[in-house]
Amino acid sequence: MSNQTIEWIKYLTSIPSPTGNTSEIIKNIERIISKLGYESFENNKGSLIITVKGKNHKKQRLVTAHVDTLGAMVRAINPDGRLKMDLIGGFRYNAIEGEYCTIHTTKGKTYTGTILLHQTSVHVYKEAGTVQRDQTNMEIRIDEKTQSKEETQRLGIEVGDFISFDPRTEVTKNGFIKSRHLDDKVSVAILLTFLKKIKEERIELPYTTHFFISNNEEIGYGGNSNISEKIVEYLAVDMGAIGDDQQTDEYSVSICVKDSSGPYHYSLRKQLTNLCIENTIPYRLDIYPFYGSDASAAMKAGADVRHALIGAGIDASHAYERTHTSSIESTEKLVESYLLSSMID
Image (cartoon, rainbow, N blue to C red; front, side, top):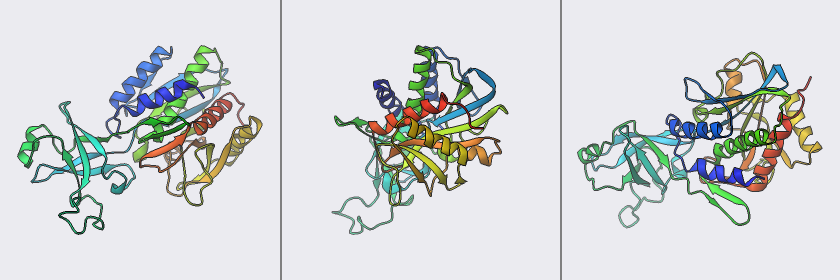
């Protein structure tokens, strides 16, 4: 696996990008793409598209990864100056309890804080361990001298300001990567590494391929627009979910056979499996019961494509996540093998 991939993962996770507030990270990726020698196009939704011409221009591919992450918005300012939140994306309050965060005001100022249960102090609240973790009881303690709604408002904080969670990215000596937002910045880094490789090694792809950096996946409508009628195959590179009854692990590439939207394209899935076997790539086939991807969103939007979903295995999805470099390497190899392969008949 390329060390560049790890460096890009660390760089991308350091840039706040909750869904709805992704312009900064898109601009940073656009600069990377430009330095690699590519032109890119930003659509009206703020997604980024890089088109690489291939030998065959009549039949095309699209591969996507999303850069938007879970986050929150200011829901209300409490009388004591603390903040209530409204969540962005599919996760639970317990997954962010005790996490450091940043409040991004519309005027460009930022303030740090901590996400806490209102009844956190066990010396005061008998019910601290049992009270419901929900919008009523969870709040943000701002790192400023504020004890009233008015004082917080004078900081420039208002309803609708975005809240990002500290990623706390760490790479261990034995190859584990721990961080928030590995979903799906691992996959974006993988695509950047592949784009760098084909430019440096002057690799010609068999089909014109569109690399779509999506920015609305966590709310269900990322890479499902700007799809040319020439696109035959659509590959989403996202995360593989780990848990009970799951085959996915942190050391292989996960190939999704079905998620909450239904089965993925059977023939394309079989091709991906055969590529793993032919190239000795560790893989797992899996069903993600509570999951939807940009590929499934594209199908619901009416795209006439064969769709597939693969990704590195991510433990503790939508919380403080972890994967291993061997899973990233397996995903890199499958992405490359697929994009250099012939389409199925």
